[in-house]
Structure formats: structure tokens, C-alpha cells
Amino acid sequence: MKAVIQRVRRARVTVGEEIVGEIGHGLCVLVGVERGDEPTDAQELARKLVNLRIFEDEAGKMNLSVKDVGGSLLLVSQFTLLGDTRRGHRPGFSQAMEPEGAARLFEECVAAVGAQGVPVATGRFRAEMLVSLENDGPVTILVDTRARAGSS
Image (tube, rainbow, N blue to C red):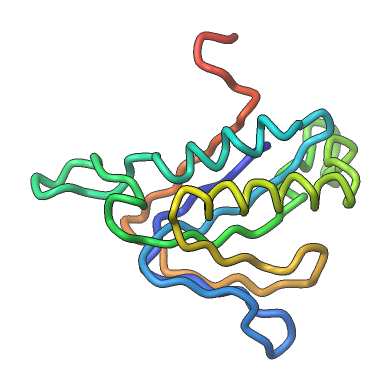
């Protein structure tokens, strides 16, 4: 799974005129599910999101997690993160998991975040969404669950 994590002051997802997900202080996370991803990837991403230390402590160092600061997560499914632009100018999406499997793993990640005691909101899977946010810092981090420590 791939994720773009943004530390935010607030974030919101709307579908049409309806607000489907909204948070205050926390993380807005765009999540792409790749062919071959498994439940372990969803669990690993959830652990990373809850424990990633990208909030400042009293000394101004990024040393606190979203859980430490009492923040929330807004998770938004985003298959376009898997767009391959190596050839030409039109991205290919052959590495994106088929929608049913992707929805299952996305929901497993959402549940795993919630199980760790962090409030979580979401967008709407396969909907045309408008995502608005106020990036705090700005701080933006990329995570790929397949890029394990020590691997090349």
C-alpha cells in the first residue's frame, strides 16, 4: 500500500454537497492499494499512521504521534497514487488493485486505525470526491508498505 500523509490543521471530504468525512488537527492520508497487497500491508500502514512521530514536542522537534497529540485521521482511497508515468504522458493504472479487493483492504486499514484508539473519518470509496485541507508545516510524508527497512 502506498500513502501520502499530510499533517493538517483540518481536512474535509465532500461528495457533491455532502460532507462525508471531516477532521480537525491530525493527518489527512491518501491511500493507494496495489496489486499483491495483503491484510498485513493494511495492518502495517495503520500502525505506521498511528505511531509516525511528525508532530512537534515542547522543544519543537518532531517527536510525537497523532495518538500522542489527541489528533484524528482522515483516510481517503486514492488509486491514482499507483499511476505509472514511466512511459508517455498518460499514467497507467495496471498496478492498482481491483476495486473489490482494494475496498476490503482499505476498510481493514480504517478498522485497524480505529482499534488503536485514534478517531478516523473517511472519504467514500469510488466516489468523485473533493478533498480540502490545511497542511500544517507543511509536513508531507510518503509511505510504501513494500519498501521495508533494509531492502533495496
